[in-house]
Image 1 (spheres, helix red, strand yellow):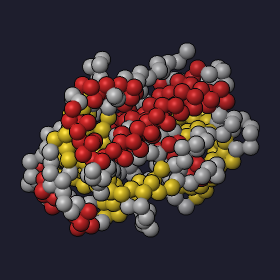
Image 2 (cartoon, helix red, strand yellow):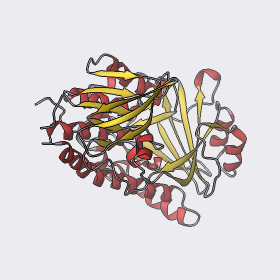
Image 3 (cartoon, one colour):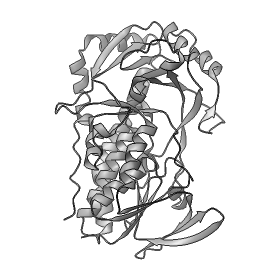
Image 4 (cartoon, one colour):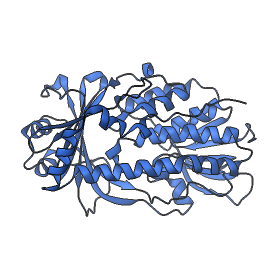
Length: 398
């Protein structure tokens, strides 16, 4: 069995990193979370947590009641962007009764952080950036760490890279870098207290050739998260969180229903996020099993299946279970990859498929609309059973 006294470093204190820290701690490991930001700020936008994500959170000690500001949903409504016509409703509640929620990313991170800070086996080190690593096939990985103006080296028995699509660990391993997907996500929020127009109830997606928009409530229903995914085959600006203003987005909504243009007009600041992906065949660590990648660092994908956060949390649980039960590190890494890669590949294909269907041009969109309108919500929900019915492994100290 893998030695539980092994020192574990988790790179990144986002959703993937905090989830990994909690998962490994529940399996008896001591964990250091290394985060380059000096302060964990309330950044990001909304996200959706389906039943598989909620079960994975439960496995690391986070119940739905801990997710303050989360708004439950039972269906997702699909509409046509040009005229607001309802095309379909999709059941998203799992057969075992596990729900589906929309939540602000900061609220999820806050729940994870609260659990991390009460876990004595976890140390959180802010303002600590990984500047490089050295792994020569021995029994440790040496990280070069920058803290303020000082540099130091520190050995770890296992490094879990949860540092996002622009992972410094992946860069140090000389893995192929991320590439632009051809789409940009424009994100904004509407605030009920600031006089926003009435919110569309629940989770709603508007399908259009040039843009598809998804809205859902967060912050206990007081705010509405809006993300518009626009196809832009070429772009020279890859900076995330670029404050672009409303007008560039409004021009991309030409011909859309007034419901959408009104929401953009009354929204808060708009940010532009070029969507990056990593190669589908990216290696998820080194052969010795002393370095593994999880979340976006391993498999950043398009958002059209709303599974980015869910896959990262699942990764954390499966990785910790593999390292707790496998006979050695290399076997643990192989088990983790063997369990995760088929599911990740399927989720990636589903996201690409959804994106293609959402953006279908006329007259192909007419066929899409007809097919959707002929199917009931339960039937459409069954198409996603493979995704939502996933069960996490048990995390335990043997």
